[in-house]
Image 1 (cartoon, helix red, strand yellow):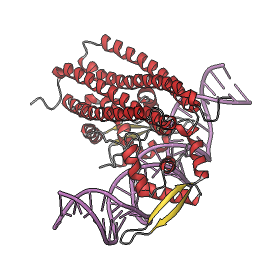
Image 2 (cartoon, chains in turn green, blue, yellow, purple; image 1 turned 120 degrees about the horizontal axis):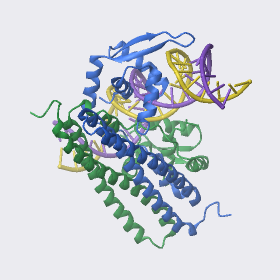
Image 3 (tube, protein in one colour; image 1 turned 90 degrees about the horizontal axis):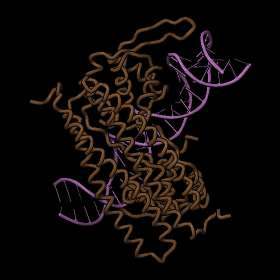
Image 4 (cartoon, rainbow over the protein chains, first blue to last red; image 1 turned 90 degrees about the vertical axis):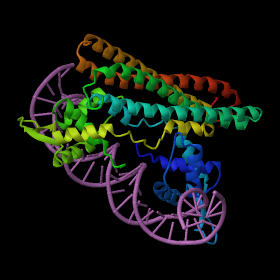
Amino acid sequence: MATTNKTRYAILGMLVMEPMSGYDIKKHIERNLSYFWNENYGHLYPILKRLHADGWVTKQAEENEGKPTRYVYSITELGRRMLADWLTLPVERLPVRNEMLFKLFFGDMVSVESNRQRIADDLTFADQRQKQLEKLEEELRAELDRHKDDVEFRNNGIFRFMTVRQARYAAQAHVQWCRECLDILDGLEDVGDEKEEA
Amino acid sequence: MATTNKTRYAILGMLVMEPMSGYDIKKHIERNLSYFWNENYGHLYPILKRLHADGWVTKQAEENEGKPTRYVYSITELGRRMLADWLTLPVERLPVRNEMLFKLFFGDMVSVESNRQRIADDLTFADQRQKQLEKLEEELRAELDRHKDDVEFRNNGIFRFMTVRQARYAAQAHVQWCRECLDILDGLEDVGDEKEEA
DNA sequence: GCGCCCATGTAACTAGTTACATGATTCA
DNA sequence: TGAATCATGTAACTAGTTACATGGGCGC
């Protein structure tokens, strides 16, 4: 049950959009899902091979002189069914492991400055991300508006919209928390029995 | 550089608090860090062995008749230094993989009801978690108040406080997002060309 | 009597990462 | 001239999970 191999479904998901090569799959994921998903070649290619062996996808060679042969994969009916089945399964709750919180938990073993630096970096990162997502959200919103009569388009776009919103909510909350922490650390500094302070 | 083996540091972190057995380490993590960290025996015991071989911890046998010998581990000076060094290192940004968002992204491949159910479950979970964390936060706050003159205690407690806050902010944001999604899905329902609806 | 807690660990496995290997084309 | 993009993959590795094995004590 815990042996889900999500890479399988990530591949299938891409192939639902259109047939493509392993290379394309990776690029598509990078371009469209990177804020919540990713894959790497070393895992992707072997899994693609297995999907083919299992009949979840078909493979078609495309010769290109000078370049390696390009193999274009398409999802089969079986593959589509397997994906749809998996999509209805409840999300597997993975054991949490938040390295940032772990390090912060032991914050009193290092200098206040070290803690502040970490959180400041995090704030910068989350803030940037938040802005990117804001932009993406606006784009999607505009696109939805343009297609307000195309039911199928809307029905698809609305889900993408929701995923972006989630990431934005998370980024926003993180920004707020970072700011609060920096304030707390400011009040803590004067105690300073650690390294720095020179 | 990416070969960090965080279990090593999780173990060391527990041993900084007090010397204990592998079993105790697991239990302590469960009781104190479970909202952002976890370990399992199958990994913990072998790593503990390696830490011992590397001289980061020492081991002391405690015979108990009827029970397996209890081995109590203590952190060494070297171990303490290795932990402190790691704590100052920037947090490794792991590749994101959010199964929930992935499934939602392909939401139009399954029924609206299936999507709603998933988000409703998530809302229930996040809401409960949020309440637990709220309680924990109040407890920590009270404890900090009681020890307001003990600088060392405060300095340690404040970091724990910050970790709980982070988890709470995240849970809160998630609750909000779930509610928003349920609203969106309500507006979507009438299009229904999927299974259910019987 | 049943099941949970204490307490140790190993073996077999899966998932995922990184580095390696190859090589043409295009653009700055 | 050098880097990026297209395009395939394999090999060696690490981290982490699950299932197994053992067995007394304690409370309901």
